[in-house]
Image (cartoon, rainbow, N blue to C red):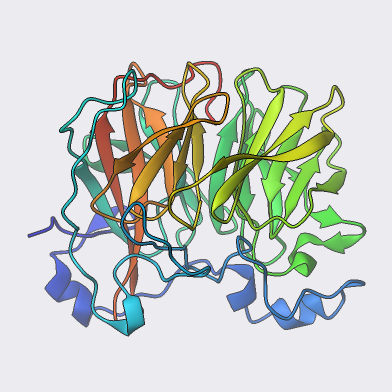
Length: 369
């Protein structure tokens, strides 16, 4: 029996009460906002009829099959194939990846919440886990199974990133999609592209990674860079983007591209060059990315966390009982991997869960994503 579900900062008495309690998000992703049509009607370049993969269906994230099996693009979140009731966690076996994880380790369920309220995770300075909450418009800190608010009144907050100098950025997925700096100042960093609101790209802003120059790379149905002044440039060809992250030395940018990860060389001014396939994934639906202290890349894709060496060699996959959407190292020594899954019940109710697993590998200490 799973533990009680958390709503906002309170607790529900379990799934039975959940089934009887209507849930209304406090914040909506842009395409669900009543003002979306009026805003996009002002676009010089209208959004595409169907948002590209990675632009994101409102409130949904891709699910996936067990490691090694393929899933179609746009697969449903965990537990809702064909509108069926959510399935329980699948059986799995974690095999050894030398220097990364020991054989036989198990994922531990750390926390559950109602709504689209656990995304874009990263470690805080004390090793605690920070989670972005879409529906609550907040960033919360998870400690010992309980969350406390860190930032509130955000416009449908999504992924986060922190620079080596301590600047914190978040994407806001509500109407008027935005890359926002939370610290040291709370301000808009970027919200337009070629004179149009970012909403004109279609779908919603997805993931981001901030550099040491004051710029931010983000995905929004494509790959973009907002420089220190907030000027946005698009990069890449034929990309189905989702997760994005810089290497530790900030010389390489990685972005998920469907069933693979693309890499770019980062120029001195933040521009990107030399797009190439970095690694082919054994399961489709590449989603979130994180790195460790040795430069290895971790990619969530279905019920697996794939691990690639700095040279692009696939080292192995960490099996999971659920489809993982994002992952991050945290804990006092950054030797615990945390990951999030999104679940949608047959009645459309969405919830999220946070899992953890002990690692041999250690997260990169110089930057939180």
